[in-house]
Image 1: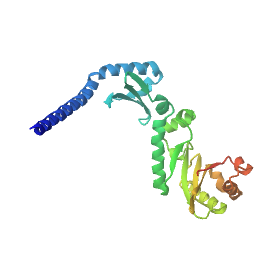
Image 2: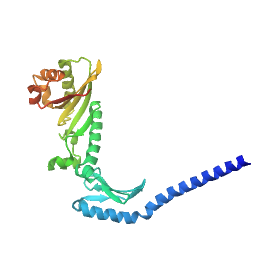
Image 3: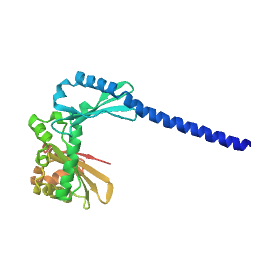
Image 4: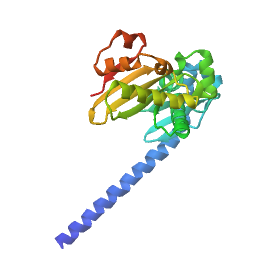
Length: 251
């Protein structure tokens, strides 16, 4: 009997705990809805106080409550992919304006992925696209084209990061591989600001060099093999510097 009673008591306690837990979850979600109007007013006041200058150029989406946090998305009228969030949690309001909107991280991240997909489609090469700087640091004309997403694959506001595995680890083979890949992009009229190419020795994958600031002009250089030789010898010579090429060993 004692064993049976203990089992019944255990089941009863478990049931109570389950009911209380579910009740707290429901109350938490419903509680968010109850305070939604109040929090919405707080966020509106915060927006008007801190970001008055952008009110006419943005739209507000519906306030969302999830995981004990209220979040409202503020989107540019000019481009839906440029936005930031205002968040309310634990009686504190924070936002992502500086990074996502002013510096344009939300938009530039989207555009980088779009260009990566277009490059893969046109060249069958997998690469990574990165913005040269933040949105607010581009000139007004460049910002305008970026916001309009106007033929951006041909606008030198980004750089391409490419990884190559080289079988013959010498200056001639490496210079030829870099040249051939840059020509592939040239033929498709894909024009990044520069290339960052990570070369890895196929016979020794612990040997890897990141060569950056390689431009289209590199393929026309008469001394490009000498430059690569200096890099292979880890020498930042005058030839390397005068072409504004930088490098570092990854391993």
